[in-house]
Amino acid sequence: MTPRHNLERTSGYLLLAASVLVIHLLAEAANTTARSSAPFLSQPCYVGVKGLVKWPGIYGFKSPPTLQQAIKRAGGTLKDLSIFWPFGRTDSLCSNTVTVSAFSAHKAVLRFKRIDAFKRITLGLKIDINSEPPTGLTAIPGIGKRTAQAIVAFRERRGCIASLAQLARIPGIGAKTAVMLSRFIIVGTENCPSK
Image 1 (cartoon, helix red, strand yellow):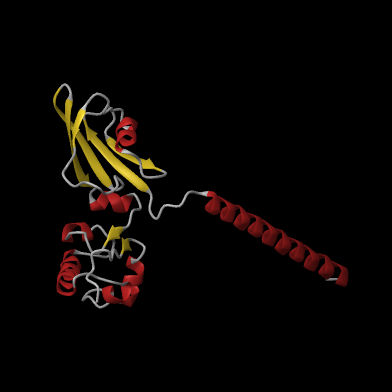
Image 2 (image 1 turned 60 degrees about the horizontal axis):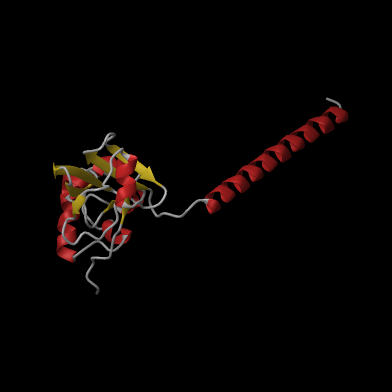
């Protein structure tokens, strides 16, 4: 090969590398802009609606909806209905299912229930390791019945799990598994006893 061919070949490789670098930088800049302009939610908001609605199902929202918005999305309405709320209900509709049922023309009863853990995992929602019952914990990939029972026993002894480091101390879970589980769980510490 002549020196001229070597120079052309090297120039071609440098031009290709520069092109790949520019494309990568442009793609990264576009991703950063898209992420920064999106509204912030720690988790997506999904609300299940069933009962006296046209289209029962689970619906996604960009921000937590009002009860009226969730029921309207499923093809129902609460207009002209007297609503009997469950006593003391103050939390968000996100990750819950609302069942609308009527006993007469102008009265409705709304029941609220947490969306099943297996559906939440499928939707990409994280499971609270401190409040989920053993059957819900088995929805988390890598957690079987025995490990779920060990998590609940640990929670009951300590009051709650305060960190991934504590989670790694549970029989059946080590440091590597705890890190893997962090993709699927949150460590809700609002009900933890302060030490």
